[in-house]
Image 1: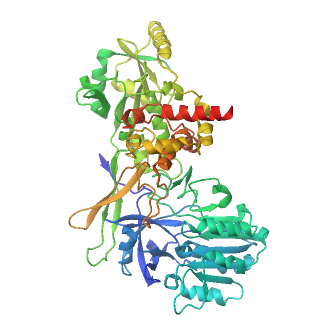
Image 2: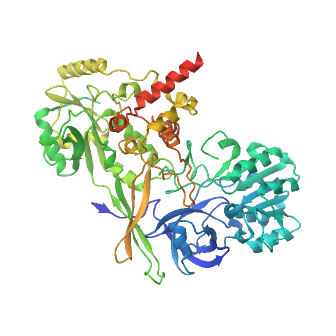
Image 3: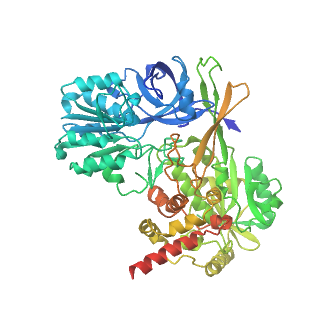
Amino acid sequence: MSVMHDESIYTPVMARLGKVEQLTKLEKLFTLEMPDGASLGNEPGQFVEVSLFGIGEAPISISSSPSRSNGTFELCVRRVGDVTNALHSLQPGAYVGIRGPFGHPFPTASMKGKDVLFAAGGLGLAPLRSLINEVLDQRGSFGRVIILYGTKNPSEVLFKDELLEWAEREDVEFHMTVDRGDENWRGHVGVITTLFPRVTINPRNTVAATCGPPIMYRFVLMELLGKGIPESQIYLSLERRMKCGVGKCGHCQINDLYCCQDGPVFCYKDIKGLEEAL
Amino acid sequence: MSLWIIEKEKMAPFVANMQSDYRVVGPQARGTKFAFAEVSDPGDLRLGYNTTILPPKKYLQPPEERMMTFRRPDPGVGRGEPRAKMTLEAPPTVILGIHTCDLHGIKVLDQAFGQGYPDAHYLARRKNTLLVGIECLEPCDEHSFCKSMGTSTATDGYDLHLTDLGGAYAVDVGSERGAALLEQYAGAREATEADMQQLNKVLGAKWPRFPYKLDLDVGELSAMMSQSYDSPEWEMLGDKCLACGQCTLVCPTCFCFNVYDEVELNLEEGERWRRWDSCQLDEFARVAGGENFREHRAARLRHRFMRKGRYLEEKYGELGCTGCGRCARSCLVDISPVDVFNDLHGVRCDGGE
C-alpha cells in the first residue's frame, strides 16, 4: 500500500528566485519569494533548508531581517558544495525548494534598551545582517550599535553598499578590517580582534552577537569577555551539518544539543562547557 | 486485564488468519542466526530465537526510505516550477515475537520521531503496526546485559505479549488494538488457575538465569557518563575502533539518517530518499566548507556512548541503551558496552579513593 499526502515536515514549498546579485567572486545574494506572496515568518538568526531537486538540500542562514521582508527574504550564499554551486547557476525566475524557517533565533526583544555589539568574520556577516538590519529598523529601541567586521582581504567584503551606509550613519559605530590589504585598500589591516581596542563599552549594558569561521570564536570570545561582557549576554551563531533541520537526523549534534533546534544561535553561557561547541 | 492462552498448535492458524489483513513479520532462521522477516509459512517462525541480526526497528524506520517524488524544472532552461510530493509506505503490519529489549528500543524511536516536529513517515508506520512481544526466558548469549539495563522484561510498550509456558503461550493484552487482534484472529481461551500457576513458575525460574553484567546500577549510568567525558578511555577505544559503523547499524535505538536525491535518466523526475547513517563514519559531521566537527575516531566513539548512556535518556526520558548486546556481537575489534561502562565506572571509583 502506498498513500500520498503532504503533511511531511520534509516536503519543501517552492519559492521563486527574484533578484540575484553577485556580491563577491564566491558569494551571491538571492532574493526569494514564497508562494502566494506569503511571509516566511522568520526571526533574526534562523535558517532555511534549501532544496534543489536532484542535487540535494543544504541549510542556509537567512540574511534579511523580518523588518524588511515585503513578502521576500534573502540568502547570502557562498559557492562551496553541490547545492550551493547549483544554486549559483540559477537565474531569476527559477524555483527552489524551501523548508523552514528553523532554529533558535537571536533574542531580539530582550536586547532592547541595551547596547548591541556585533562581531562578524567573513561570511558570518550573512546571518548577523538579519539582526543588524532588524535593530537598525527599530533604532530607537536600542542603545549604541557597534559593528565590527573583518574579512581575509578586500575582495571578500560583502554588502558593500550597506557597509557604506552603516559607516556614514551617526548612530552606528562601524569598524572594519581585512587580514591582508591590497594596493587600493586604505582601511585598517589586521585580524578582527585588532578592532576591539578601538571601542570602549559599558559591559553590563552590552549584548554581543558574533558569527564567523570556527577558528574566530575563541579569539573574539576572549575580547568580549576581556571587556567584561557577561557570558549570559554573548550570543553566537554556529554552523553545523544540518540535513533535516528538525532535530531528527543527528548530524548537527553538539554534545547533547541539536544545532538545528537548540541553535544555531546559542548563548555563550549555555555552551561554554561543551567541548564540541567551539 | 485478564490473561489469555494460545495453545501452540493454534499459533500457525493465528498467523495465517492475521495474514489476510496484515503483513506479518517475525523471527526466522538465517543460517546459524536469526532475522526478522515477512512470514510466508507460519512454520518458519522461530519464537524461541536468541537474538536477531537487526532489531525490528527496520519495519518502523526502514534502512532506506523514499520520502518524496519530485519533478525538476525543464533541464537546460532551468525554468518551470518544480513539484514535490510526499510518499509514504505504511503497510498494516504485525511484528511478532519482539524481545523485551527491542520493545524498549521502539519506545526510544517513538519519542525521537514523535517529539518536537512530528515525523509523518515514521508515525504513519507506527500507527499501522502492532507489536507482539515475547518474554525472554534466558539471556540471548554472553553479550546480553538486559537485566542490568532493566529491559529483561516489559510491562508496557506492546499490544500483546507472549510468554512460553511449554505447550502454550500465555498472552498479556497491552492495548485495545491488541485485544481486538486476539479476539479476531487468535482462537485464544481465558487462562485457568493452573495456567496462572504455570506462568508464575516460568517467570520465577527465569530471573536467576540472567546475570547482572554491569558493576553499577543503571540509575547511575547517566551521571557516570557525564563524569567520564574527559576519560582517557576514549582515546584508547578510538585507537582500536575501525569506525566502520556496524554498531550503529545494528542498534535498536540508533535513528540518525542521511538524505539523498536520485534522478531519472530523463532528468525531469526523481525521488528523495533517506537512509540509515552512522555518527561513527568520518564524514558524518563534515560541512561543505571542509570543516569536520567530529574529526577524530575517539570523539565519534565517545559521542555514540554518550548518546547511549546519557543524551537520549535526558532528551527522551528513555534509556538510550537496551542491553541487547548487538553492537558487541557485531564489533570486529570487540568493543563492548559492558566493558566500556564497567571500565569507566572502575576508573571513577579508583579515582575517588
